[in-house]
Length: 207
Image (tube, rainbow, N blue to C red):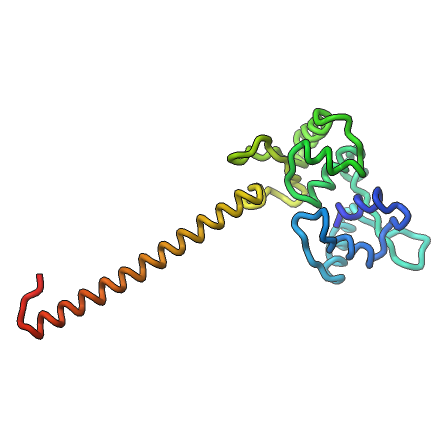
């Protein structure tokens, strides 16, 4: 929600501040989003009310249609470069410094990757920290950054999509093996019972 307002301020300035319809459309946008969500108008309004209580969003005046704008930089005391980085982390999830430099191009143009990392380090050093540098995932060449505006980063969210998929496959394989083990154990018990019954009928003591 907050990220959408910052993004649209830069990408479609002619329609900013956003009307409720435009805000809902931005929240439910399918491109340049991770994760992609589908929120109702009521859910968007509930989120807006929460952000308004924190002074992060307020209603614009001078229009017959209610419009919303963000107050992120002022509330958090952040320069535009830091706001741009947080916005992309909110909209697209954890990313490397190189990815952030590429994706923030329309919001803020960074001279190089070291400049991006400088602002990220500054955000990480704030109290409370605004971003975190995630441990490098197996097979990944660079660590990724995630925002902390909604609390700690969940382990599954911290893992790259490929790693998440591998973990899901591994969990599925384990579940299948357990189910097969249970089935085989049941078959063995049934065979044992059959052997005992046949032995009794034949008057033979089973071993």
